[in-house]
Image 1 (cartoon, rainbow, N blue to C red):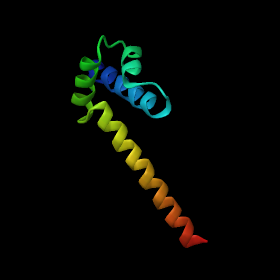
Image 2: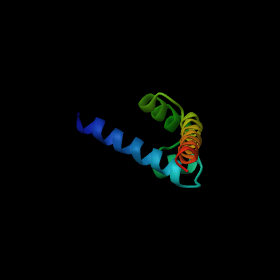
Image 3: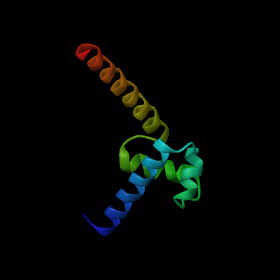
Image 4: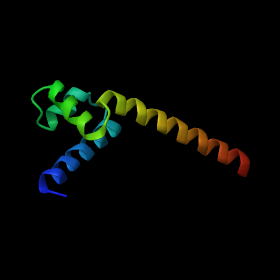
Length: 79
């Protein structure tokens, strides 16, 4: 992995974390990551992850809901 790839990966990881744990908008997070506009950020994010920032949030939310459902089902069977 090159230094550029490493830095890019760290930016994406930090961005994902902020998107999941904060109440900030995607635009606010993009600004904090030093992107000058939302379009550039969205293009960068999508080229790195294969999905837009909005798609990532929807996908992550669906995964969280599914994980909670699975955990609840497991608790029902063990009770």
